[in-house]
Image (cartoon, rainbow, N blue to C red; front, side, top):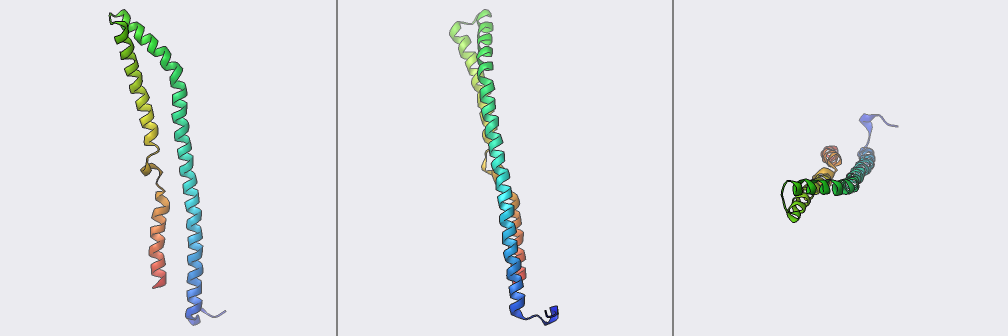
Length: 130
């Protein structure tokens, strides 16, 4: 092998291309890892939404009956008591759904690490070609 001072342009270009190919391979591996992590995040968020809905349903029924009974005893008419209890339940359910959906937002799932790394690698590749 020739010394670094005596290397020809094709050798240097070949080494640069080999390093660039290795860099691209590493970027794909990083992208796969980050996307896998984000998919896990989506799964956990969906599980939280589902678990919240499953636990909420029987508890909500009992709480609604209790709240409606308390409102009826305090002098509210039956329909108004049921309406107030149902409205409160709708607010709680909406809050749980909104929390789950916020965890599924595009910004939360954006593969930010790989995007930053690709930007750094673009700069490095441009410097390598110069």
